[in-house]
Amino acid sequence: MKDIKITMIGMGYVGLVTGAAFAKHGFDTTCTTRTPEKAENLNKGITPFYEPGLDELVKEGVDSGLFHGSTDNKSCVKKGDITFICVGTPSLPDGGIDLSHVKKTACDIGEALADLDRYHVVVAKSTIIPSTTDSLILPLLEEKSKKKVGKDFGLCMNPEFLREGAALHDSLYPDRIVVGGYDQRSIDTVMNVYSGFDCPKFECDLRTAEMIKYAANCLLATKITFANELANICEFFGVDVYEMMKGVGLDFRINPAFLNAGVGFGGSCFPKDVNAITAVAKSKGYQPRIMNAILEVNETQPLRIIELAENKVQGVKNKRIALLGLSFKPDTDDVRFTRALPIAEALIEKGAEVVAYDPKAIDNFKELTDKPITYAASAKDALRDADICVIQSDWDEFKALKPQDFKELMKTPIIIDGRRTYDPMQMIQEGITYLGIGWKNP
Ligand SMILES: NC(=O)c1ccc[n+]([C@@H]2O[C@H](COP(=O)([O-])OP(=O)(O)OC[C@H]3O[C@@H](n4cnc5c(N)ncnc54)[C@H](O)[C@@H]3O)[C@@H](O)[C@H]2O)c1
Image 1 (cartoon, rainbow, N blue to C red):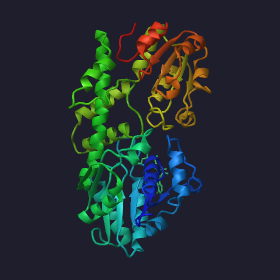
Image 2: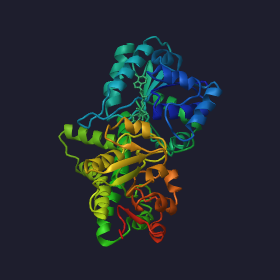
Image 3: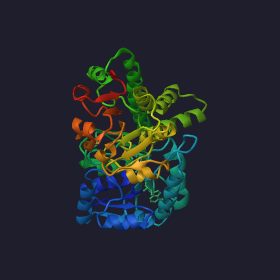
Image 4: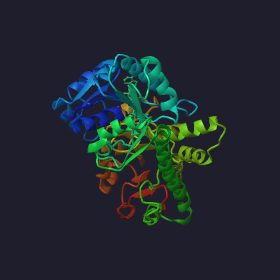
């Protein structure tokens, strides 16, 4: 066991997964939550959400005596040496972010620091607009603790880059670590925690660290949106956007990642972060034209699926549609900003009957909408008697479906694929009508 004790405030994707990774690296780590049941479950090795491999990693941490759950932020901060703020920063209606959880957490930490007579470092890991750490968190910590940053406690901003669905890999083997600090002592303390992580490490000031996270997510959202825009144009020429992008991605200045066209991006980060940076830029009197365009294309992109369906079957009214994939991407049960929602709602609006299925996200999706959707027990169950199958996210369970399954189960074997799950040639040779965004539609 290492001699630094860590507290993660927030038991969501970031707090729990990165906390489990710290425990794996030998640090005594406590993850806090406001929900007693979640804390009790964590102490029994039970995780609150689905993420591949997380159950095993959490159990290993709990069994080793290094990973714990708690509801008591203040006592955990007092017992520890470093506290990471990992609470949610959800979108507000104007696109900005809700900092109420960050504020509450900073107050709790400040009150705990008041009773501490040793150096402690507070680290913001949540995604927050530049200046939040120095102009919101710092004054709250000093006010509540009656202590001075730089002298009594340290302060850092350490953005998190994990991807849901691959969060374990990303936390255990990150491709870079960015630590922005109030001063060098704060940075050195946090970098010491990461000394066992083998990747490039970047030191900077607090605001640069905050901005790096937004810049990275906005650039990735831009790549996806660019691929989607190109997909829509490729269709006019019968060019397959997926093949075309393979050629584009060979350029070392571009690289092939995030060039897959489809129904647009969802999830808890890209839409929230692009909206937040757009809102803050506007509040400063600047119109961010690229960000505005990204949001606009992403809004309309899922509706391309409806357009393809309507063109193929002359309207979707009274048609039975199997909608496969409800989470925003495979290997997660997270439905925040999932593109399945606008697709399902538009289909129902047009009079279609929607039978939906997802391996992990049905319960979460039911909380998003009260539209009359039937939920199936399996992908094959959803396909039964369907006129069209719409694929919104490409889980392995869907990849494993055979052409025969579509032909035998569906009324008419028509697949409209938002993710290019199958080889089009194979599907077409098998007598399936296989359509998607950005390739030649027979
Ligand atoms: N999910 C991702 O893929 C991801 C990746 C990188 C960065 N981020 C950023 O990290 C932050 C957290 O994201 P997340 O997905 O883990 O959020 P989340 O909503 O899954 O989890 C946040 C957790 O914090 C808890 N919480 C709120 N206030 C609390 C308090 N006072 N005390 C204890 N717990 C409290 C909530 O109950 C919730 O469980 C966000 O700013 C997000 O933008 C997320």
